[in-house]
Length: 296
Length: 276
Ligand SMILES: Nc1ncnc2c1ncn2[C@@H]1O[C@H](COP(=O)(O)OP(=O)(O)OP(=O)(O)O)[C@@H](O)[C@H]1O
Ligand SMILES: [Mg+2]
Image (cartoon, rainbow over all chains, first blue to last red; front, side):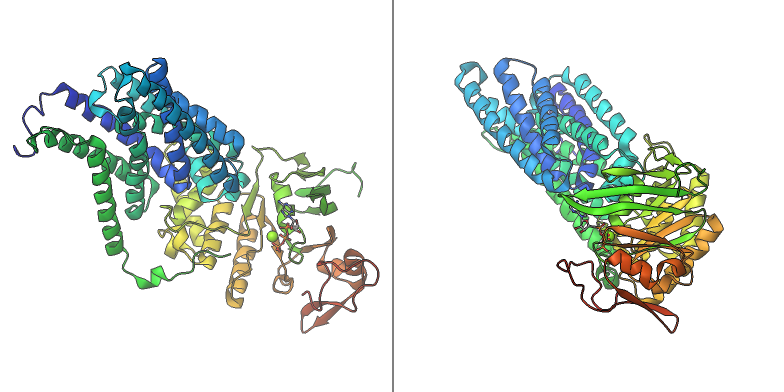
């Protein structure tokens, strides 16, 4: 195994922090992601990442802790999307698009401004592509607390959320408060993507949110198992990404590491391909495939 | 119908008015449903059947009127009503098995993730058997056929042991054999669980053998009573606003428009030739 784990891997504090923070973020993203995919809100999830980016960039500019910027930005974005009309299925894409556009504009402005102030060189790279190797050990408890809050909140609304993902009509008839549950989920989603934006970067945090859950949903037949599988796949992809990025330092004579996010996303894609192959294997019945898609 | 007499009805709909986009959809709708009765809600496309169900469930804004269950207004915690909506499209990729959907009928509105008690699992099995859905209990709901989903939805709505079950056009898109099966199944379950049923349909004929009462919707108004009281030329003509005849042939009922109405421009509420 010596070839896999390059020198210093086990003793390196930066690596350890990266693995731990990566674990927390991957699990949170995967669990939240299952509900995001089931509710068809992947686009909203991606948009919230961009909003978080604007927040993160703003935080760099203002000299505030990046975590506050990322998460705060995301939550504000969730509120804005709710106000514009993310609750109605038809209004969803519009609300998301409007907020997305505004956020990208702000992010561009903040990044431009901080690139001009000499002290913040590399901010763009950091904000957009993440910085798991630069996460300070003190971030771990903060991220863990946030993650705990996200998971507990999600567990609290899991069943109403599930029922309303299946059918709004059924949920409303059972007395589910659709609007509150939807808003709670948006805030949870914002916090989760804000966290992962810090670790693997804004652009690629969508991959961690959507990729492992999409793979898990291809093969799992129960929500609980899908959640567990997605978490496992997310952690695996993150750790593989960290390992390869670390190793890649030794791959080239120039000693330039390749970015973590590249490896994470590559692992996610491989996982998805494997899941798709498995799904085809597990459901060979052509009869099942030609069944009517629900009644109209 | 006086407001003062004590209500013995299970459900009472009083003078409900609904309008949308400045158009009246339901006008002064009133009727009641008794414990354990099978009521057919009959009306053509766009008559307002779905709207009426949503009013009863308290999820449709209405301009005026009230809905009373046991003489009390509906609240969020007072939901002794099961509902099978008209259109439910389940995503075949959702990892929800038929039995999960049924269980969500019992606890889908509850917060928290408490472990489901043994008794609930038993109740789910029992319910699935009652609607003959045991064979596909472990398949994803999205992969089931329309008729199979129908059964699972009935189990979903009955597991909370409601006193009233609303079914919005559960017979549409079923072949004639399945129509008879579902009606027989509902009749059986309704009697066993002592649940009152309000079922909407375009066609009243398949329901004639089981229907205790009928609520007939047309032109935004309703007429209710036993079939014999409601399905008469005088009552239906008043409802449609022009003359219709009622023919009884071979145990079937046909509602026939005799001529195009004179007067105001025809609208889509008029029976073309044969409504039933
Ligand atoms: N949200 C809405 N906004 C405006 N009009 C509406 C709305 N929902 C329903 N309507 C109108 O109200 C009328 C009654 O609709 P409803 O869906 O209750 O009819 P229905 O009896 O269930 O018809 P069907 O048999 O086709 O299901 C229709 O004319 C419809 O166009
Ligand atoms: Mg309808």
